[in-house]
Image 1 (cartoon, rainbow, N blue to C red):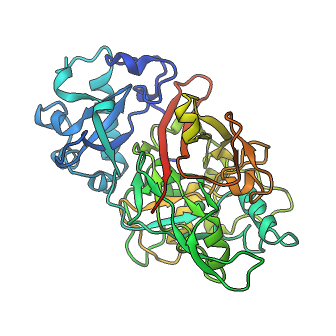
Image 2: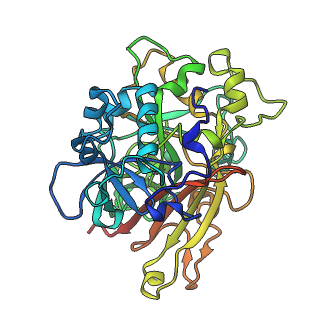
Length: 439
Ligand code: CA
């Protein structure tokens, strides 16, 4: 991989922003994720910021104050854009230079004596937006455990289709309905045909679900007709976020054959607002999924020794729920699952390489998502469809309420973080969404 460890990953680095030095913060100085924001309640042009502790560093103000003197002008201008696309399209070297400048500026022993009140805002005072103009969104299906569990529910005698271990399966999602964390999600209506009925009816979905996923943004793109080689794939990835691919299972069950998901998914997809760069994730790289001896090896264009030795990322991923009743009673969210991104059958490099292998051009700001992250262990299933076995085994919340699928007023919270010996823990923040009645 091109993302090596350097001084910015030093676990002993501390920031003059005190909240960034707390052990459990998602945003220590070793993370430095990018987001796009504006002051709460304002209609100002969005600006790019970097999370540090419970604050956000305003890059436009840093530029105006000349706090990045060594950086090329073009890079500084990209930092003042209303979204991350320009920065994403610049590639790794400028991004690395920016990471080093940010680390220098924010470290406790900085020589720059930055004007704190002019460049920092409290995260609680701002609104975080979708960080890029997302031209295209593709959703993969990269967990073999999810694919097998779901396959069993729909095809008990033939759960995993024969192409699965060869092709990173995906569908083209809808970019227009991608929303930032904390956006209310309206329950969709659609065609539903219960098994006991002979014709469908148009009704509100009664089987609304979440899907815990990891998304990755394309950095530099590729020209039409130009594939991306597996060992170059990560040079085209800017960073990662959390994704909730909301799914109406009753609409999906009726519409999905033969062309795959459509209206069951396209009503909304929530993403976490912070983009954690691949550079920040360097200490948490791990081998790709350990395939069974009897499984086929990936075809040569999806295979490299580098990717199999370092293509995985160990991100702990959790899903929490809080019902309206829990909220009224002051009960904290309840944990539904905990798993790791390490268990995905396909790596992010394999997904991106496969996407471009036919010459399809990817563009800066395109979003690719992993598909539901489910692991082998009990308690690591990334959606209710699997956890409740399509509603046949409801879960019980701390209030005694039962859940087969989501009801109005339920809030779903995704969290992700990375921990490994010898390095500072980093996190993704939260990806939240509450279901509201659409009528
Ligand atoms: Ca999905």
